[in-house]
Length: 358
Image 1 (spheres, rainbow, N blue to C red):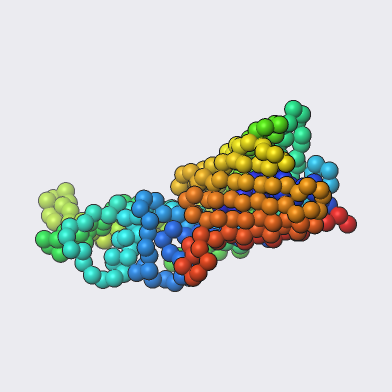
Image 2 (image 1 turned 120 degrees about the vertical axis):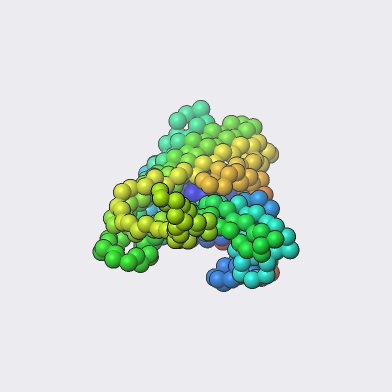
């Protein structure tokens, strides 16, 4: 997944031009384990072909105009970011129900799904400071106005009994969504707000290098944001205090609206490697993505021999099975990565930036 701080470190190493006064950049990183990207808009669970274990889908898009002066930077930016983590069994259950054909035998599907996403625009203020001895510290603060906020968690389980030929469900859902329309809903704020922080620490030696960072941790707030909590339980029979059989509803729910700030979890990354001849850098990066786990990547960079000359970079993202290439020349940087080049691609990254002194 594209990351701001690693991209900045890699960008300066690849370009070799130092800090520019103005930087205009656009990047887009999309991935889906269970579905080709060309079918991402299709609302048909029959198309799902999940990978074993937990499945990951994400969107990470950003457009940014940055003014840099000395150690400080000020940027206007627009972002769209979201992750979906679902177990293989949950996706197989969705496909099974969509096909409408009962399983050949008894089945049990544990269900776990977590969705987080937001879309917003605003300002970012950053600073990079050399600490001596090859150390460098960087930090960034983002203040965004949110146009969209969506979080949902579903857990529980489902079973199919071959003897009776029926499904049994026990599921719970908790959703916060700026586009929810609840019965008897009160008016709520048209926009939300986000305060996100990032920080990184890097060390460059004569033969080795290392970097560590955190990003996108912070708080989101939306006054009156609709929230819907629901449970589905097909075990509806019960007995009251007098011993009479009673029936409970299959679906129980609670609608509410809240505006309290919610913590948005950090993304963390750690990278280290060696410095080769000509300033080339070879290393391994590991990112920890909330709700999912570790995403490793192998990286190589060859910096420009002189300012403005050609620089190259390459990255292999292990989970995404995506090869990315970077080319930088005279202030332009182009980054592109795919797991495959046809309509079956499930992972794609594109980026373009231009830096200039005015």
